[in-house]
Structures are given as C-alpha cells and as structure tokens.
Amino acid sequence: MQFTRSGISVIWVIFAVFFGILSCSHFKASKTRVPPFELTTRPDAGIGQAQILGADVDQIITDFAADFNRYLSTENEASTKGHRLAAGGYLLAALTALFSLGLQRREACDLGQTP
Image (cartoon, rainbow, N blue to C red; front, side, top):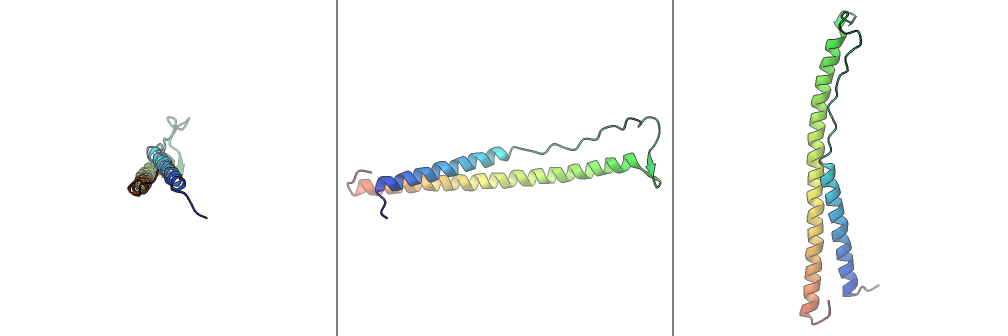
C-alpha cells in the first residue's frame, strides 16, 4: 500500500490535532483538585464529651481529618504534576507532528512537486 504525499500530510495533521487535544485535556485536568475534608459538628457537641474506651471521639476525628487533608493535598500536588507532565509530552508530540509535516511539505517543494 502506497501513500501519496498529500495522504501523508493528512496523517501528520491528524496526529497533530489528536496530540493537541490530549495535551489540552491533560492541562485542564491538572487544574482539578479534590476539596479538603470538612468535619460536621455533632448535634450534641455542646452537651457533653463523647468517649469510647476513655478516648475523646471528637479529638480522634479532628486528628483524622487533619491527616486525611494532608494526604489529599499531597495527592492533589502529585496529580497536578502528572497531568502537566503528560500535557507537555503530548504538546511536544503535536509539535513534532507539525514539524514532520513541514519537512515533508518542504521536501515536496524542493523536488518540484505539488505538496
């Protein structure tokens, strides 16, 4: 199966558009963050202290929320970096496809053919 020069040009354009869309998609995803965990107040929090086996339940939940929010922050940062790295890679692939298209078109012009 033999491709014409214009057929190869179309393939390079398709690759450039495809990788460009993936780049934009990952860049948009890099701005998405999981919101922090927020505690709700117990309805009877002002009445007394809730304890289980001598441990203050409110303090345990507060400590858990703080630890969980630190974890979410770390995951948000990792997700942002990963998506931005992927966006950069796809952008580089799109630019490479456009560069290859330009080289292919230039070669056709140098040979005196219609690109």
